[in-house]
Image (tube, rainbow, N blue to C red; front, side):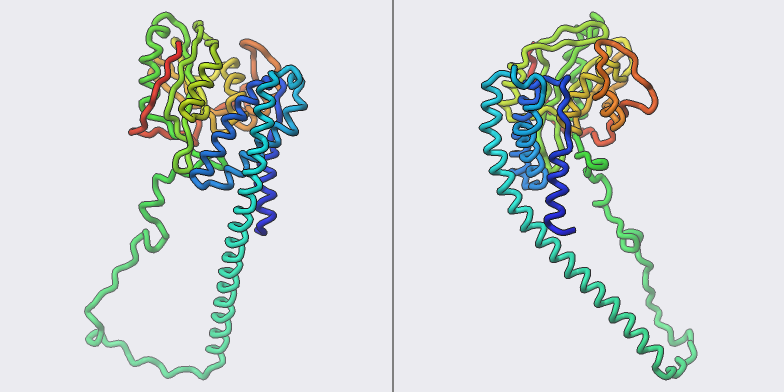
Length: 351
């Protein structure tokens, strides 16, 4: 693919999102802060394509899409001013990375072209050699085979890994599913969270927390759990104190990667309220997950919305508990999420 074509595909990825009027402007602006933070993480880890997409996406959101939100005029002016200032950085970084990517893509294109030409030349030479052999006079027959003359040495057959290109490194790959990056969860998350929620669970009240982390080795890693001020019932949980949450994210250079909550007496699933709660997370970050702990049934599950679920819920204006269609499914187990046995988890309990 030509370098400019590859760059256009990245820009198309940056542009392909819609602003939902149900999500407040302040939430988008706050998400923009995390978007810029993640873009800088990608610069540090030299994942320039991801960085370019996020810097571009931030600029498009602030300059083009967000001003069309019905609540934009009423949003706090200081937040809009900060976003516009960050936009200058985003545009500058996107332009700088664009030049680096064009150089990289041009070098890769030239290399691929040279390899293709070499392969074609080798194929042409092989065809020519075969044609030349066909017009030569027949060779003298080989001498008769004699077992006594045969060498006693043997040649071992190739191993499966040599024959089929398999190797140990083929297993345990942390590449994401489809276009989603892998999201790594500490294996201790469920048990740690249930211990923190124990008193609420005993009182038949839900508990919720926010999953935060950073980019590590090309994957998204959950490293921190924030428990905000909250009020729970048997089937819902409402949080408050957003500024405290943002303070933790800013202080420890974290981004939001999803959320976790308990179902004290129910199984692990996403209710209609849960689905709409998670919609805002996944619209901001496609890899965001919803972890549900169901202690009564000894189950902890990690969910994500299907593409159909994203589309359906984005059009749904229902409030509170309300019916949704069940088929096709709106959510599923998150295949891109994996557990890390040695993963650490830092808890910030703001309750």
